[in-house]
Amino acid sequence: MMSAIVSALHVLALALGLPAVFFRGRALKGLLDDAGLRRLFAADSVWGVAALLWLATGLLRAFGGLEKGAHFYLASSLFWTKMALFLAVVALEIWPMTTFIRWRRQHRQSQRVDTSAARALFMVNHVQLVLVLVMVFIASFMARGFGFR
Ligand code: HEM
Image 1 (cartoon, protein in one colour):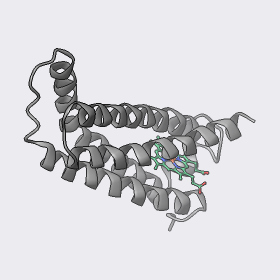
Image 2: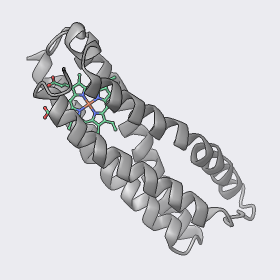
Image 3: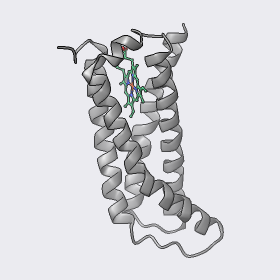
């Protein structure tokens, strides 16, 4: 039962995370006026929740004895590929995260927000979106036992 709940939450993270990163990209491409910034911050918050949910449920599934056991995943090259891609998404998030924290503060204090980096941030966001899509395929192959010699 626990395994089913955690599995559902892991998939729910995808249902939250993918639209969130898509709409964060759209907001970055659109007009970043007051309403545009609010849309950006809303999508960014959901993206953050999804990332935490992915990590918590993923770790539980891999190492909490809920699925095939840690030895299966540690021996799977596709598990390590998936972890490398996840780390890449997290590393790529450092710049957007620090930027959006600053933008949120300036917006809250009714200061002018310098959004000149929006175009470059859109590109980073786009790479993250593609990496998440690739991870879904890697995960499905991993779960079915591919990735062993
Ligand atoms: C962007 C982040 C992630 C995405 C898109 C993702 C996607 C998925 C998907 C779609 C599945 C279901 C595979 C299937 O049953 O066909 C899955 C399963 C799984 N994921 Fe993730 N995941 C992510 C992050 C993580 C993380 C960070 C971990 C571990 C630390 C993790 C560990 C697992 C495990 C252990 C399974 C179960 C595989 C099995 O059934 O044997 N995932 N993931």
